[in-house]
Length: 347
Image 1 (cartoon, helix red, strand yellow):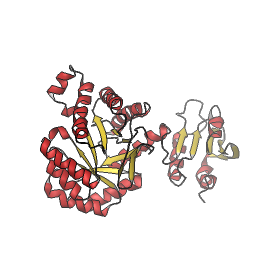
Image 2 (image 1 turned 180 degrees about the vertical axis):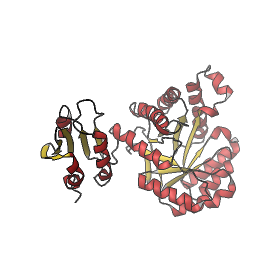
Image 3 (image 1 turned 120 degrees about the vertical axis):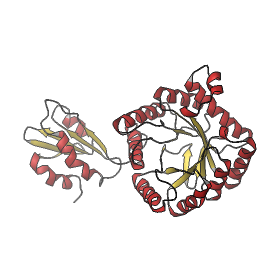
Image 4 (image 1 turned 180 degrees about the horizontal axis):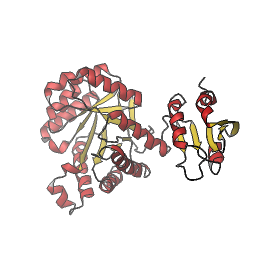
C-alpha cells in the first residue's frame, strides 16, 4: 500500500498497490506435522495471508518442506545466525525467508543472496530492540530508536551492495514510541521498499492488543507499513483477527461486519450488551463490509442506525429496527431473537 516497490511471494504481493497484508507466526514445532497443518488451516480461515515458521535446526528442513508442500498458506522461514539454514529453507521450497544479515559471515551471506536471486526468494531483514549492539547504541548516542534504525540500515546496505532488492524491511521493539520512531526513520531512508510493522513482545490479553494497536495504527496513519503482525501471547488466529480489526477501524481493509454499538448510559432503553450478544452470532453470516448499528436509546440511535445497512435502536417498549435508513418495525425485546434472522435476510 505504501512502498513504491512490490515483492511477490508465490501469488501473494506485498507493497506497491497491494492492500496491507495480515501475517502471523506458527506457534508449534515444525516436526508436529498435523498440529502445524491444523494451525495453518485455522489461520487461513481467519484470513491470514502469510505465516512465519521458525527453522532453528537443519533437522527440521524436511519438516519445513512437508509443510510448504501441504498447506495453501504462504510460509516464510524464520532464520537466525545460520546461513546454511537459510539456504536449506529455500531448497525446501520456501519463497520467503527472514534473516538478520548482521549475524552472518559476509562470505556465507553472499551464498544466501546468490541462492535467493536464482530462486526468486524474498528476504525480510530487520532488527529488534533486543538485538541492538553497543556499537550501534554508541553511534546513536544512546537513542535506542535511532540505534534500531542503524541496525536495519547496516543490514539493508549489505544486501543492496550485492544488488539484492527483493526486500522487506522491519524494525521492532517492545516500546511503542521507540518502535514508531525507528520505523519512521526507515521509511524516510528507504521509501522504495515494503515494510513489515508490528510491536514485538506485546504481551497477552487487552494490554497486548492495546500496545500492538497503538504502534501499528500510529504507523499506518503515517502511511508506513505494507504488512503487519500483531504479536500476542495468544493463539495466532487471534493475532489475525486483531490485525483485521485495526485495518477495518482505519478503513484500510474490510473483513467481517462493522459493528457499531453505543457504550450505554443512564438513558439506555435496551440492554445493549445483551442485545450485542444476540446479534454477534448472526454477523458472521453477513457479507464483509456490512455495517450494523446497535444503539441503546433514541438520542443517537436512529441517526447512527440510519447510516448503517442494519440498525437497532432501543425504545421504551423494546427496539426499533432500520434497514438502509428505512423503518423496518418495532418489536418487544423478547421477540428480537426470533425476528432478527429475517431482518438480516438470513432465513
